[in-house]
Image (tube, rainbow, N blue to C red; front, side, top):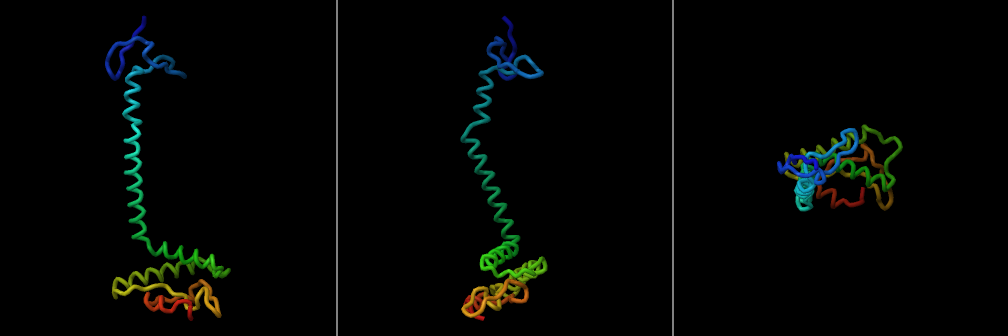
Length: 157
């Protein structure tokens, strides 16, 4: 009877205790079935995989939070554009220049808060959804004003 030495447990065992290798490299695996099962149990431990997933998930979550903190203006720009789009207030001539001006307006809000200590917001001079008139979402309809004034103004011109 032929035998082989397992590369993991270093014991000489019968070939029937080894898995066959298929393909071009016909023959037997270098480690026995018992060692293979033990190795798989360590690698594919569901608890270990769950912890690994959670740690990666937590790292990605933290990375997203950090990115948000560094790029709030971009998020505000997209939020404003989404809102205007749902209200059908974006004109046909809206282009990359308008998007640039909007991003700059949000950066100006951030800078003024840092310098003056007062919260600022980008306001639509003519509201997108007013009683008598509806404005458009473009750079000539935006103003950077203090947050409390914008909130008290509501949908009034």
